[in-house]
Length: 293
Image 1 (cartoon, one colour):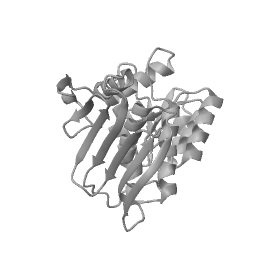
Image 2 (image 1 turned 120 degrees about the horizontal axis):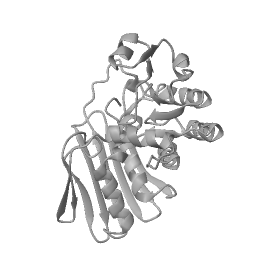
Image 3 (image 1 turned 45 degrees about the vertical axis):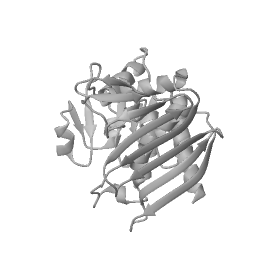
Image 4 (image 1 turned 180 degrees about the vertical axis):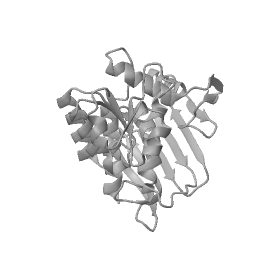
């Protein structure tokens, strides 16, 4: 945020003032209420545990602030719908912070699919796994929105949503979950049928070796995200393999690109931000998975 050209970190609030100071804001507030009511704050970035996203998004919107809220957007479809309606009622910008969507490589892959360069889309295989050390972390709490699907499964789901569109029809054909002692999913594996013609396989896991992969197949050709950072490539070179052709991308900070585009949008300038319809599609897909269990 400090590096973004149109952003000032005016204020921070957290449970620990020292953590707030470490982010080098102009002001440290002692409460979230004080932050969202600060007249010098135009927009709020919410990075609280998942179960608090809806509550503080709604409060911030009603306080007149634009909101950039961390993924997963909320705990369920009803919460997402409430957040979206509140943003409309308050005429404020609301965006889910899925920063991988601003990476030029991801944008290029989506453009290729939408243009028909690989023909009719037939399948998507998306994986995000790593052996997580989450003892004492909210990610172990089901009540706080923990689990692999919510924490990292949203990255594959957002990639799928970007490729098939917000109005795509989804059928969950298969889902397998390995639950941990606290009831959260340590691993979730799923197979979706989209628009009766596209197979989308996804895997999110806290207990398997680190791997991020995205492979997109069409009737004519395929697109492969080269390497093991399909969703979190940051300040490093990256590449796409389109059939037998490799396209390379300079290292960028997609998080900063997200911040800059969000900032431009709040100021009425031309920019792209993640549509709320996409966030709703992802949450509905999560609900469809859970209903199958």
